[in-house]
Amino acid sequence: MELISNEEKVTRALLVGVDTGEYDAEASLDELEELVKSAGAEPVTALLQKLPRAESGTYVGTGKLQEIAELCRAQEIDLVVADGELSPTQIKNMENTADVRVIDRTTLILDIFALRARSKEGKLQVELAQLKYLLPRLTGRGVEMSRLGGGIGTRGPGETKIETDRRHIRRRMETLKDELREIEKHRQMLRRRREKDGVITCAIVGYTNAGKSTLMNTLTDAGVLAQDKLFATLDPTSRALKLPSGVSVMLIDTVGLVRRLPHHLVEAFRSTLEEAAQADVIINLCDASGEEARVHLQVTRDLLQSLGCGDTPVLTVLNKCDLLDNSLLAQDFGSCIKISAKTGEGIDRLLEAIDDNLPVRMQRVSLMIPFAQAGLVNDIRQGGTLLGEEYTASGVAVEAVVDEMLYAKVKDYLQ
Image 1: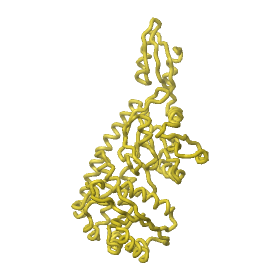
Image 2: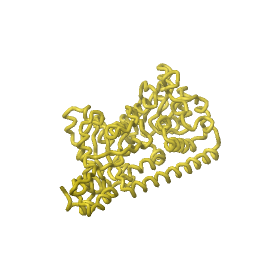
Image 3: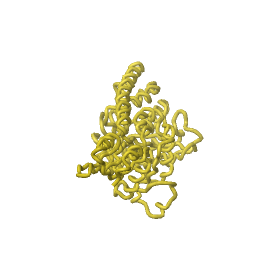
Image 4: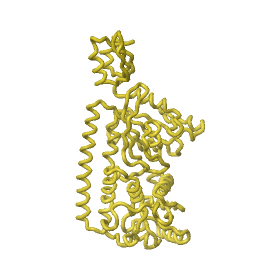
């Protein structure tokens, strides 16, 4: 896999969108610019054309395509990125006219995923998603294949695999699915073990670049990659977090979401996202400094709903509040917690909110347990959190966090 940083010069990209009125095309094009930057390229300029529908043969109109070709020559553009999903015919016609490589939004996102994936599972999921996208597009790839030589849109399966026949790709896809099934079995086994051990989980979900990894680092010193790039984190990270009540929970960082994420990418990473679906508490983290904060919150809510998280407590958390002035902070986002993962502002309130929404109400207690009832200490060790114990003349002095059932057993020995 050839990384952008190893190339001699930075790829100069022209962004192209078609506004059919189906969605906010300008906002989508702005996001495409961030995606291009995350891939390591330089977005030089962007063009947006209003059309009833994308042209079947050229994506944009023929006049606009000529304008694109002239811009590519005048500004030394290396790559055209379309803010939509292109057919092989559209790619071929656009490349022939502009004489530069053309990719679409999905290819770009897949490319970033290939660049960011670190774990074995992440890499397998990326390759499977790439092959799913490639399979129906094998016909007519001759022109763009002649342009492949490393760079954006060429990571992952690579040239030799792309030129193989459909049967070989299908065999490879089945192999990837088998390997992913084995990993999923292992994940389910770990999940069952956590449930058996009474481990409480809390998942951080949200739009890409909302600050999930920074929050994870602030809360747990996890050392997760935290950069101002889209999809900086692809692989789920789990770390223990101790709450003010003394309860320890497992905090999970998940892959970020993005507007118009291709459905097969959601499917490919569904097992990772299901970590969030299985969590006891969900933190829906949003970059409050972004113009599209409400849209991003809704994207996440919709996905959580589709994963069947309707009964799970969801905490709406607005991050990067240190970047906002008081008038923006006063905007009504509904019931939410305002924080800055970078400065630590509001973190105490967030931890208290997690405590308040735990599936079983836990409380911290100080006990003096008589020696005749010393078996209760072991019950606490097994079913609660034993923070400290000291043997005295009167009995065992215990500091612990217990649930309602344990509390009923030990309440007579409260100090």
